[in-house]
Image 1: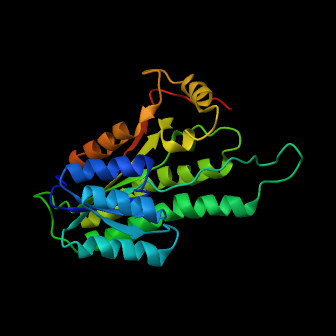
Image 2: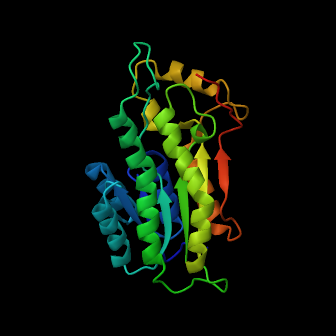
Image 3: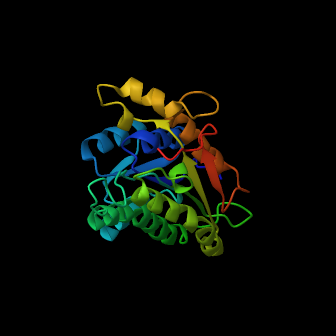
Length: 257
């Protein structure tokens, strides 16, 4: 699918993987809705790429609907949805003091990462269904969801995070089958260790990054947000890619910790 002349919604589009994807799709000619909680940064990114900002908590149905409405209001057919909003969390099922995992933190991670992905996918797909087909195959749109290799090889303390990302992986095939009726493809990317601002704020950031890179097979470095964005665009443009979960991790296989 050619995104030129279409509208796209990127959740988490104000930073990291989402920002890189928003910039990549804008370069390809899409009008991008940057859906994010960070209003200052989100507006700045949207202004720079000629897009629209929509303040969005993806776990809130009404805010997601407003973001989708903003995409429709651009006057361009909504064709692309990229779910990259998410939060991390580290907590053991039973910690060293013998206390069980907090149910509140578990619910929060599930609400943002899993339910948030489901919300944008379902609400945006309903809007995509109202557009005319874009090609002879009857294709109307593409959804790209972001999971994690932690969905497949979760480490110690990643119970909530891995469960949320595993749920996204598990949705891929049934969502693709459901949405085939309206000409929408669904694929999921599982990133490994990607160099985003989340890793750069501590005093020992370089040392920490070196430890993360150690199990990467090749190339021996962290992935780049721009490489993720390139993969998103490739999955959108390749019309035969559907119902697939793609690892994007330099060959890493997570150890327990």
